Picture 1 (cartoon, rainbow, N blue to C red):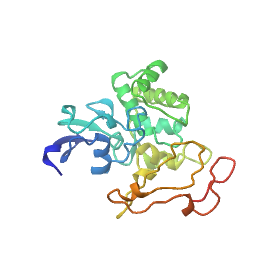
Picture 2 (cartoon, one colour; picture 1 turned 30 degrees about the vertical axis):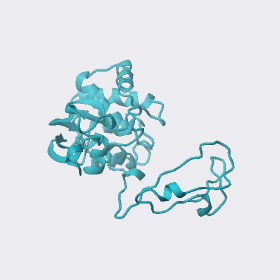
Picture 3 (cartoon, rainbow, N blue to C red; picture 1 turned 45 degrees about the horizontal axis):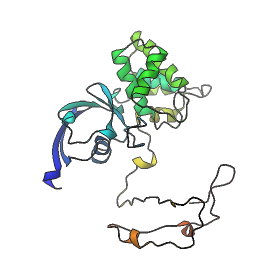
Picture 4 (cartoon, helix red, strand yellow; picture 1 turned 60 degrees about the vertical axis):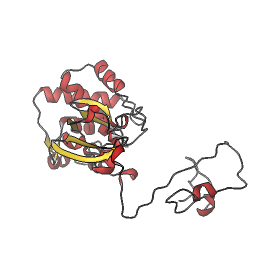
Length: 261
């Protein structure tokens, strides 16, 4: 690593002090995921528009894709990720409320939603629906599944429980309450609200290769020839795969079966 372009950074992450040497232009998002393995911080748009990468920086929701490690804002700060929301083996009232209210579906946006909600309730224990909407909007927390109604309901429910003094709930006790007649209390939902569920980009294997999709710059054009010389010249190039390498008919859709990959 070039010392001129690297920085020594000290962070307190979920109460643990960490000091590392890392590239100054690396984002906090990539540092957390790639260097520390904290994959509950999700990589979405990487431009600050979706809120999936939200962490708490000294108690404030911040989109980690927008912060470079060389920023003065990051030296010796307190960072909280989803792993710090509740003790191991427990659910924070927010996490429980999200499951009970059906406030998550695919779960990709959920870590960011939960941390933004925690910051809101720390500063405003009794938020109105408008307060909740404003907090999510301010931090650009987007959800493409739920339509937000159940997310707002879950945050309001958690606020009521926290105000009543509810403590973190043992996961085993929470899951045992799912009798099969309560479809919202699914076991996989616990993995989504705790950040332990693995999405494709969270998986790391020894010798793992990474690919990039290249789309035609001309919609509906018929490709008659492909010049792959530029791709083959890229350092670390391993293989170029086109539709000809995949068996089956070249098609994709909702009403027809996708081409098998």
